[in-house]
Image (cartoon, rainbow, N blue to C red; front, top):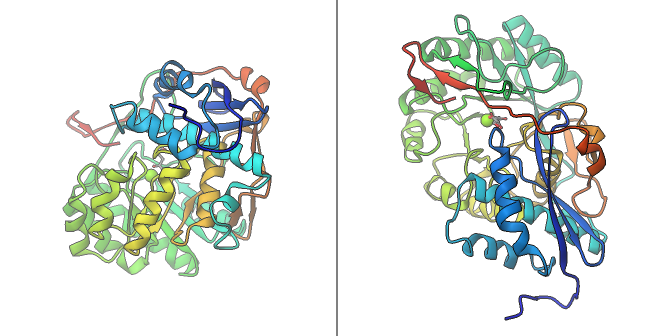
Length: 412
Ligand code: KDG
Ligand code: MG
């Protein structure tokens, strides 16, 4: 049976996977049509990059050849339902890369930025939060000040915990980017919940005391607490009116959020490790969260993310897309197009990418007065220089592993 679902005669003639490391590892999918139009998608899965590259190269790219690039939903379903083995980070990241590349092509063919194809702009710009961190409170306050001086309306505050050697979210040096993946083998961090719970309210109190309440304050717990510990943290942060606390508990246990919610009015955000609408369903329909933080690249691309956000809209839950530096500029730009067009946008993470990413990716987004815009270039608005990418070969890198003082493994 013919798989052509539109009047165009264009077909996909090439699908190529490029793994490169301009500042950090990125997996990029480049799709070319018989009309010579190219689209790019991001298939980066931090610390497991080559598995997605292989999934695409060995199992997905051959299926794309000859297909109609305009039939995005049909190709999505073909890759999802047709694989039989559904969901999971590797599969869904691969499908996301195809999906974004096809939206890029559709935009270029139409001569329109993708957000116009999604219904147009629902707002002037996308509120983004920057990543402040510090080894102690004065350093953290200086860092928050830097983001506020640059115009950010929202800042995530992470800081070293006294007595804990290495903590999630701490930036090295003067750059703007926190990069946890380092080393040919995983580094080990040692976690102490008690010290953390005592420390976080003191740090947030210092931030609010110095800067007041005229900006959004966020914090990432990074999956480390039990439900009752998370409830305690949420309660202790209520005076500082957080925009959200993110990933308070390991996200697999969706029912845990009911307990947290019974105890605190601090808003809850979760979703960066979710891969499909099914991972979010219970949390959304039971109204157990306030923000759903699934990403374009790990949750099936623009097409699937829109479905997640539409489901959330029904329940008064807002979006909060994941935007760490390990999502390539292609994913980040794609997220901006979605953010701009959905009604229930909440907040977008913006962790600037590490140089020399600009040698490989040319972007058209803008930042002004705390708001970002994806730009009006046709498609996603990111160009990928394959020759430049070849100068930055893949480097094996892992995320850290977390342990407790007794040596047992804890959530990182
Ligand atoms: O690859 C893991 C990172 O994306 C994650 O640790 C970053 O939690 C994160 C965040 O909110 O940016
Ligand atoms: Mg996070």
